[in-house]
Amino acid sequence: MKAIGFRANDKHQQGFTLIEVLIAALVLSIGLLGLAGLQAISQKLNYSAYQRSQAASLAYEIADAIRANAANASGYVPISEALDDCDEEFSRSDIGPVAKDDLSEWENRISCLFSSSAQREIELLADSVRIKISWDESRARAIEAGEEEPDDQEDTDSGEDLRDEFEITIQL
Image 1 (tube, rainbow, N blue to C red):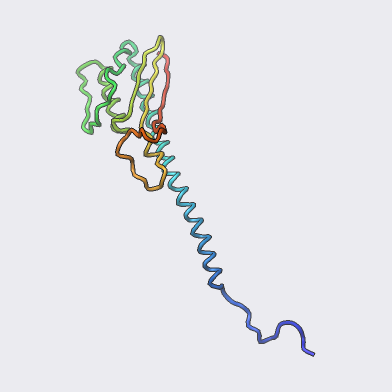
Image 2: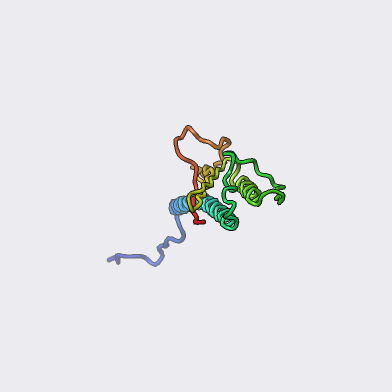
């Protein structure tokens, strides 16, 4: 009678089959694609956070300047709506009123950090000042990884608001 079971000379399987290797490669590649997508989203959110922190810093900077020169607070209200283009060689004139020099320097810094599409408001209230900075957020909100910043800053076709803003109100 023959014994049931393994014989001594049976070869045992060693290594992996080709299908196992292909499935493992597929699972690994799907995981790596997911990580690449997370990296792209992380970069967009980091850029958005950077812009928001710069806006906060600029708003508090002009707020401190207004508090330091509260007697001339009306000199900090911008005259025109549009910002000038960024002047890399900007320097304060220090000839005219301090408020005008502070405002010119501040507006140039906004233009350099956010482009000339940024907007700013300084509104004098009874005993306080409201400061608002808004900027184009389309680069940080780009939908696909690797998508470049749009050429036209105002995207009117999508209906989506691509602007972000930072606003503070300070007591004088």
